[in-house]
Length: 567
Image 1 (cartoon, rainbow, N blue to C red):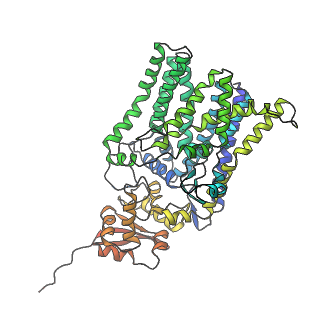
Image 2: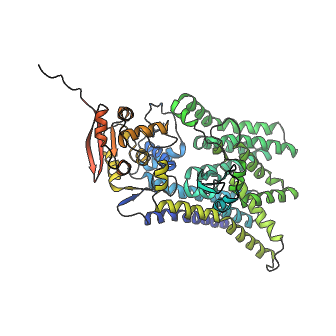
Image 3: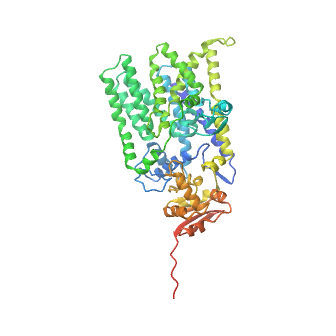
């Protein structure tokens, strides 16, 4: 690429990233003045985990704990991305959400530019490069069709639109699994972790192919260094990465270029990238909390649902793959292998984290789709469009528009609709966190951060999801996966704060220094028993130590045993 082309690509990448940041400004704009917008437009529980890690790193910790559960921990987990962002957040005690938002923008821009540079490195024309970047930033699948096709589906077939978070079955459509890792648009919109790790995957694949094609040990070492970082940031991706190296070795062998140096190049990659991967295995085996979380089942949806969620880009990718294979353009074989290996890895048996390994599959799909869009579609009959260049532009515009509905539906019909309702449907049904908190609840959280003594906090999961990132404290219940035995602990929190169950309430009080009776606790409890009465029945006292409006922070104190009466 010429310097001018690089500047234009970088500017376009940042422009796309800025556009994806506008929904957050819109969410802030619709937040009522009496409430505090917490910086999310979808599933706050996931970024709140990252906030908690950043908060710990900002406090100077290298090894991080799971703050969403109160069990004793070894604290052996660490992550280079959140460590770096956390250290930057140390500039100010309120900087965590702002640094996270900046990282989301920068990682999205880095992903889009890396996608452009990756395609350029394989010799693609400029139109293919731009098509790949634009499709990567906008393309989604067919999940938006779920409400339309649901009546035609039989009762025994569930079709998941994981690009929009819906499922359809026998005429019924409901909220269901959303997988941002299957979609470059959603990853860039929502989660800097996925954007960053996908960027690393692009450079890992490129350096791996250079290492094997040219038996270049320096490129193998670079691939290993990228894998070293990737193994620390998003360890799941290293399984498909090793499988892809194996597939590329087979390709090089089939092309008649394999020598003993081919296997030596893989050995260099494996050795250089091994430390972080081995450390994660060590931490998993030696930290019971880390191990129990890692065993949370995240199975992949049926392959038909994955194909449905990739949609038109997948169909075009198949056409693009056929095109380059028929023309013997073997330089695109790594891209084809990448798509096949990553999707296959998501269905490896006996792995609890199956679906996490599909991350990055969308990248080779949009690259191959871009090839088909620019090089195949313009040759189809279009009698009213004359000239190859014009047909190419029309084809590109048509494909982008055809791939936009799911992205638009997810953004407007799912994200922004949930923002406007403050996620109340999901909060009441599954105790998911809201997008805004009352100013009184925020004041209680800030008091805990700045004035409270060390100790865990008991509350419901709606506020509990935010407290670790805001305060650096552990909570009794706060996240469906990070909180060990979440249903049981939520029931115990109910036993203290909602429906009096002294035996359950005692579990919370035994583990926590403070209890917050906030907006959601009061709303769900209604006219039920005051938690102070339940605590007293459980052998404890809840002593108010701070209040803002109707929200109260209680300190948990043992109820002194009654003294025998004097004779």
